[in-house]
Image 1 (spheres, helix red, strand yellow):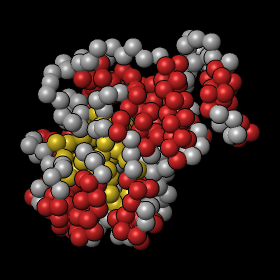
Image 2 (cartoon, protein in one colour):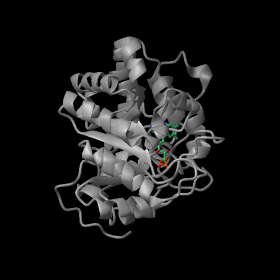
Image 3 (cartoon, rainbow, N blue to C red):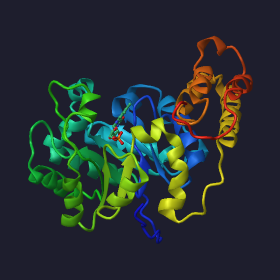
Image 4 (cartoon, protein in one colour):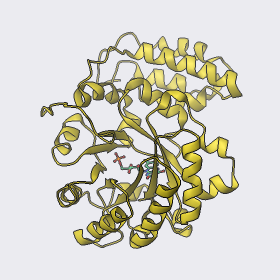
Length: 338
Ligand SMILES: Cc1cc2nc3c(=O)[nH]c(=O)nc-3n(C[C@H](O)[C@H](O)[C@H](O)COP(=O)(O)O)c2cc1C
């Protein structure tokens, strides 16, 4: 792996786990924070509508252990974004991020997400309103283009306009969003990745913080991107193979090597399940679903995972489920047969 001299001070955006709906909830973030102390964590997208009309507590509650944690908002009306950002600040988030990258039809009907890239002035107004409302960093996550717009100028002008409104941090999912004909999942796979555009943004806007996202899966790739940009965001790989996160504090922040082992992490997670249940009756399986990748690649991992996702075990206490799951894993020997 190419050696990046980890010289502080590090950008807060140097490494992050992406916002992912239905995945990066507070339970998932609790797990990720056990594995890495330095990586920035993002919430799922929370729409301004959900905060204006729904339960604020349900959408914004998080664990004190999760810091640093950024709240991602979805919306386009400046006054609603400002109100939502204010709520985020009151609840103790460390950053407010605006989603300008989600291509789903539901989001398009609400006229936010990726389609906002066609309206940089609307984004700029929203950013300005949020910056006026809170003292937290206000950041934007976006694509490199929409539909078949291939030109670099499009994303350069988007970033330029939004930066004029005071946004200093851009997280660039380095593929276009195709607003017609692709599902959100396909929109994370089909439009080609063009990292060069994200790197070029950093060259053209050296004072801005630019982080790159999309299709990055290894520490070697992270190190390579860090030669060109300030930060790297990982989504699916971090979720499916969370053990990767245990290397990051050492590799990218100069921390001592992690002394964690999977049993200790699982023990912490079981304690957390017990705590969450005592607090508000949260069932263990709402938490366990996020840790199914923890033993990926190890002997017995498949059977271990089957126990933790066995619906028939729902009535058991989590410590008992753990005892059953653990019977399948003897040590941490890696095996392709797992
Ligand atoms: C299940 C899932 C849900 C997602 N939800 C969001 C979201 O709420 N907000 C957002 O900006 N991006 C969302 N994304 C996109 C990711 O943040 C990220 O940009 C994308 O997965 C590409 O990064 P990756 O290749 O490292 O996964 C989601 C992705 C997945 C897989």
